[in-house]
Image (cartoon, rainbow, N blue to C red; front, side, top):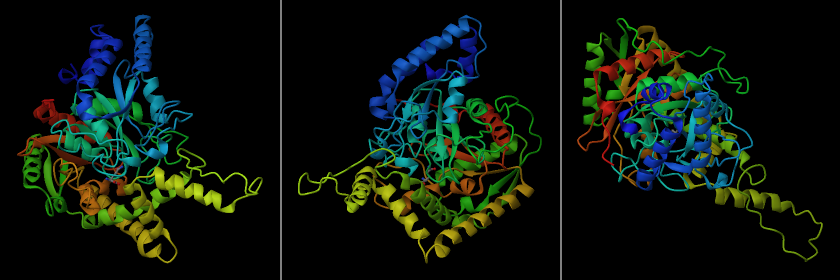
Length: 498
Ligand code: GLN
């Protein structure tokens, strides 16, 4: 059922009374029932609450009340966003039992818009990873080939779209976690400008890089969802005081002779030939649409991975210090042996023992690796050599973007160096996994918006993503270009045979 229509089309059906919110939610749960034992996109489902919410939307519609932009549409959300009173695990044993006492701002906005949350999707633990293999619970499988990863860390949020379970989902992107899984699963994902969407209630990984963003099967649906998510939030001090737009309106407006910069460095090292071919063809389509293609060089991009994998772990090591067995989540406390004169005694070593036991058991390997890396790079004597140097490189990367955007309106290139890989293929080699993020981390380091959309398939029938990047706060331009590309191509219409 989902396969046939986009979120925007379902909204029309809802408005015309041809389908009800309850029917749409039931269809979503039926699709999940049919496919999720194989795909495993979801960590939690909330069928009862979702039906109650859908029923209330239908009643309000019947009463003629004014409804929000997403009224009656089922949506899935990455399990790193706080939902009041409901599980928010971040894919970690540490938070397996955590139920936040409040809603993230984006959850509030989705509720106000009338979206119906069907469940929380799987991810790499604390959003660290590119395959969902780092989830403490189970890996998600790629709907196009169940022996392959869906990408990560928003792997569940991408897979649930490709599997036709829901029409919309919300992911987060610190170094590529929306765009890379979108590319691997053949869907559209947008990382907005840093500060465009509130991070209040998003469990922090690397605060200067994290951004929440929309995912869907079409650019138009991504635009619709961004219209709901975006906007200033006084509860997030890094939220931009820039007015949000109606991103889903005017997507067909003529773009004139847009100058598109083709990033030279992104075609040089390690790019699979089938991806290079598909992206070149997509660039031809953009040229036929009237764009002028210009080669652009981003001289510092070869250093982006190194800078990212210092800045992100440094911030993570600080952000994850709060999981100490005292404030949040898992607590492993070995009690003092009774008797032995211990009554009323303060055991000074006990606090440290609780920290150590809780963190040892609560975190998985990759999270521990990042904490150690970050702690080391921030320690006295090494801070200047690693962290501060990485910040300098970050500034040079940002300057590359500033220079490029003086000449061009949009940057284009591949989203990933390879298509979806097999389970276990990169697990033993963290560096190989980190190189997955070669083309995506630049946008996070610079803070610019970046979108991935389907532009072809490789020889194994796996989806390929085209990445488009724009200057700060020019999401609309990206969405217009992506939408108009999708009017001329049908890569986004293909569905996996599940
Ligand atoms: N793969 C990258 C990492 O592991 C990006 C993750 C993300 O964007 N959340 O850090």
